[in-house]
Length: 157
Ligand code: ATP
Ligand code: MG
Image 1 (cartoon, rainbow, N blue to C red):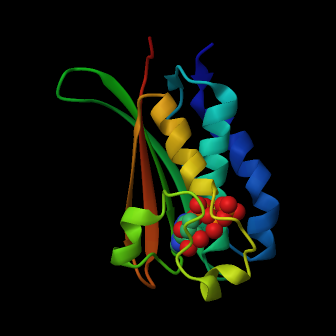
Image 2 (tube, rainbow, N blue to C red):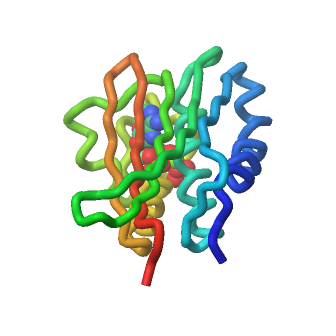
């Protein structure tokens, strides 16, 4: 069944609200009403939760995390849904950006120690995005913040 994105994203934001609140991180979402995507609900939830948990983990206290959703037509006239997860966090050095989607890759032990992760989150995200014939990219600036963009075709065969 198609996923109604405004309800779906609101419930996902709810699940990370507790952790965000502990760090006094403000959550924003910008989701059009009446926008639907044909996707696997559990997989899409995992994609967004992994990205949003990273955003909250790698953003200092008092920062901001935002989820925005848009739709657009690509050059071939196919409709795509574009998810952006942005934060005002520590950023990812340019040289590490191509490797963060690899399994077990973490930018450095010192910065990651406090988050206690395994380095699997983004490799799972990439895998799930590819299962939907989608694409993922990252833009980031050290000390300024990071934006992950996920593009999924609105309809899948
Ligand atoms: P896990 O998600 O398995 O608990 P993890 O968060 O370390 O552990 P990934 O989610 O795969 O692993 O992320 C890989 C690395 O990319 C992280 O260790 C971190 O260094 C960097 N990273 C990911 N998201 C962000 C972000 N929003 N801001 C800054 N660095 C990030
Ligand atoms: Mg992670």
